[in-house]
Image (cartoon, rainbow, N blue to C red):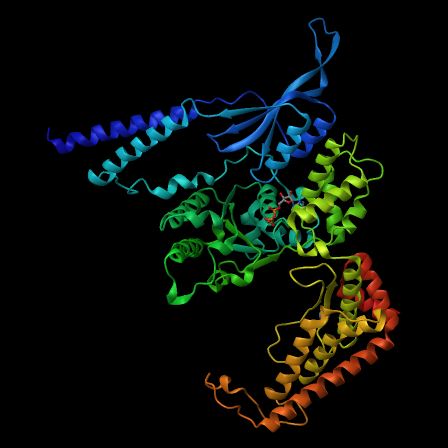
Length: 621
Ligand code: ADP
Ligand code: ZN
């Protein structure tokens, strides 16, 4: 036998042995018998009720990279002795609480340190990590040697590196399935995705009815509003597998590895279709590509992004793989992502309204025992701008505080304290959102909204008005263009200018003082006036003429295309247009002051009002 035919045999044997060794190492830790999984909340409750047997063991499982608490708890059942008489000791059960590193791990530490005996146990595989590391290194070297120097890597070359990472795919069925019952307060978004559930449940029937099958869905909304939760619930409702990854996972990957992993995920997903592939934080791989200037690091993302697009284009929507991506920064996304056949459907997941917050609190509060004075309605009122995650966090904090204070149930004072903790904890902008700010905002937005309704049909219909802060704005009045309008009329601009003035005027009329809240409105009104005159020939004074800044012609620093005198006249004309708009808006709002007041009060109470409700209010009074 020649050398070349005998060496492959030996190499395979070595590789086989290494694999067997690895597998047996990782299997060396058989799981304990039935264990009850508790949520942190349930844990606190049981702790408060004295049902946990001390000590609590805190396990750092290095092998699986997780931390959890475990120990014994008393159940409601009692132990039966041999003669069937009941001896009164409760049955015990082993529990387990998973801890999220950095998130609830820390609070747990505080609590446990305080009054509960804790034992810490570190769990490794049978061998110490050092030995494993050494074995791993040796194993890698051997593999490397065979793959490259003996040229026997075959198929995947270097054992297709990315594959090892694809284990992020969760095994199905091991966790409690999440369904729509776990999602509260975002009804609109929930309704929008209902169709996807229908499709996944029964692709054939869906196709027969002629439904248009989505391939990619982009969920847009602030962090913690339940985008991931909703995606999981879609999978849970339709009983299909759920593959999850995060754009940020790809950040520390080598060139090629991200792309390879992406391919693996899609290959696996296609095998298991119908199913859902969820990509959180898509913006970290899907940012606008900066043309030819892409250097270094960005190249790796680009490859990952391209791979994803190729994969998405490559399969037919009928195959039943639905890609759901989440972001809170849709404006930074590369437009290639939004083309037809990719993420062409958007579901907006907004911060919950008052009613939504109430529902979320109720849902998460189910697991908590409350004192008689606890009023979730009041909590909902006191938490504008809170996301679902913030609210869940609030209840967690409250339960924890209640245990500390040795209370029977969570009371109102504790809920208030927890709310403040959550607010200060994240130091969000709305922390300084006082009752006074709310009032100014309510009058301000009511001013815009009333004019929006009064000035229809010159202005677009009112969609909704809200005093829930978002981003830097304290509130918003949203219009709803009936179709995509490409062409605007003079009447439309005049109405828009008056609507812009409405916020400031309402503050002035009712509160007798004015705030900085109108700065954006002032900028918008000024720009409209200027463009009407200089760009669209809509002023009586100047008529059919354009006045452009020279930079608009050539980008060079030339003298203006009009004289200084004209420039002054334009300024005067801008002022005339705006003054007229302001005066007219003031007249309208003064005449409708009763409605203005009704709307502002309604906003203070409900925070958000639908366009139709405002219309009814304006027309009926
Ligand atoms: P996102 O993906 O939008 O950042 P998540 O889905 O990860 O938000 O939400 C984090 C957690 O907050 C959820 O696991 C859930 O406990 C809670 N949560 C957020 N929104 C909701 C909601 N609408 N209903 C119920 N719970 C919610
Ligand atoms: Zn405004």
